[in-house]
Image 1 (spheres, rainbow, N blue to C red):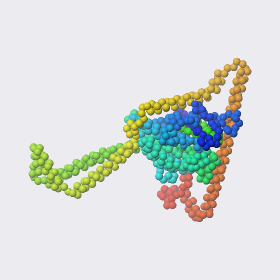
Image 2: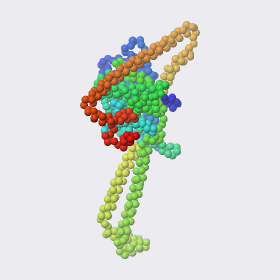
Image 3: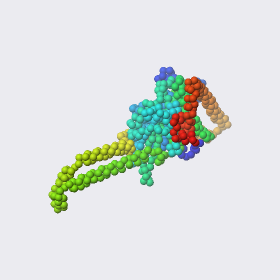
Image 4: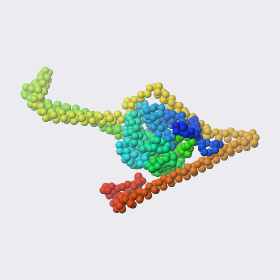
Length: 617
C-alpha cells in the first residue's frame, strides 16, 4: 500500500453536469440534480423516494453546472496539470460517466470553434504557446494514439489498424505498449491532424443511449521532452507525459439495448471499468496489500496514474434527468472514492527512453558529416587542379619552362607562363577522365543534398522558443490570459477555504456553546442528536443502496456469464462435429500459454531456435 508521505498528492476529481437534451425536454424529464459550484458540491434527489427524504450530497474539488463553458473547465482543472507536464511531470486526465453525458464533448469538443474546444485541443494550443515563450530550451513533442477495444490494444495511427499490440513491462520504462507508433509534431495544427486521423479509426456504434457511442477506451499520449543547460554545464533532459483518456460509457447493458456484438462490447467495457473500480477501492482501503492492476489492460496502462508517479485529474460527467438516477448516483460514488487516492508525482529527469538525446546526437553527427563533406570537396578540387597542372607541365616544351622560371623576375612573364600552361593543359585533356570527374562531382552533390535535407528535417522537429516556434499572441491577449489564470487560481483557493470552513463549522459551534439554563442545554443537545441521527439514517440508506447496486451488478455479470457459456458450448459443438480429432490434436499440441500476456498462443509450425531451446529445456 502506498504511504501517504509529504510528497503525495490526491487525485483531483471534478463533476460536470450537462444540460437537458432535446429528447429529454420533449419527454418532460425532471431535474434531480442541484449544483453548488462555489462549494464544489452536487446534490442528487431520488425521484422514487418520498418528498421529505433529504438529498444525497457529494463534495468534489469542483462541480460544474449545465451553464459551465469548456474554457472554465480547462482553466480551473486542466491548465495547472499541463503546466506540470511542461516541467517534467507525468499527467493524466480521464473522463468517466454514462454514455451521452458529455465525456467526448468535454475531452474533444469542436476543434474549429475556440469557445467549444475541448480539453485535448486546448492542451495542444497551451503546450505550443508555452514552448514559444521559453528561452534557452529545446523541446521535442511527439504523440501516440491507441484504443482498447474488447481488451485488445489497437494503434489508431498505424495503417494496419487491426494489428493487436502487446503490453510489456520493464524496470527502466515501466508499463508500455510494444511497437506503438509515435509521431513527432512541431505545432498545434500538426498534432490536431494526428488526432483527426486517429479518430477516423475509433470504434463507435449505435446504442439506445447515443448514436455514436464510444465502444472503446481511447488514450491520446503526448510526450514533451525538454533539454536545458544545467548548473554543471551539461545538457539535462526532462520528460513529461500527458495521457488523455476518453473512457467508454459506464451504463448498464440493459439500458444500452445491447445485443449480439454490442453485448460483447458492453461486457468487456463493464469488466474493464469494474477492474478500474477495484483498483480505486484497493488504493483507498488502507488495509489492502494488493492492488489488482493486472485485471485489465486499461488498469495496467493507468498504473502510474492511479497511486503512482503522476498528477491525475478525473472528470466525471453526469446527466440531470430522473431517468438516469441510478447511473448518475453510481458515477458520483465512483468519483467520490477516487478522490481519496494519493499519488506520488516526481519530475522525470534524464530518463533512458528520451528521444531528444538521440535527435541531438543525430543532428551533431549530420553536422559533422556536412563539415567533413565540405572539407572533402575542397580537398578533391585542390587534388584535381594539382593533377591537371602536373600533367600539363610534363607535356610542355622548353620555352614554357623558361617562361615559368622567369616568373619571379617578370610579372608579365608569369602571366604568359600561366597562359601557356593552360594551353598545354587543354591540348592533353582526356575526355574519359573528364566524364569520370563530372560523375564523381554529381554523386557528391546528390549525397550532400540528401544529408542537408535530413539535417534540416531533423532540426525543424526541435522546437526552440522565439526561433523555430514564435508566439503570435499580442500583449493584450497575453495579459488577458494571465488575468484569467489568476481568477481561476483565486476561485480554486476560495473553494478549498469554503470546504474547510464547512467541515470546521460544527466543531467551532460546539466549542462556542454556553448555556444559561438546563432547558437551553437540553434543547441544543436534542438538536445535535437529531442531526447525528439523520446522518446515521443517511449512512444506513447509503449502505442499502450500495448492496442493491452490488446485487444488480452481480446479476448482470451472471447474465453475461450465461451468454458467454452458451457461446462457448456452441463453439465446442462445432469443434466436435466439424473438426477431425487429429487436426484438433495438432492445434492443441501447438498451443503455448504466455504468462506475461496472460493468454494462449499458437507456436509456429516450423519451430524456431527459441522454441527448440524451450523444448530441450
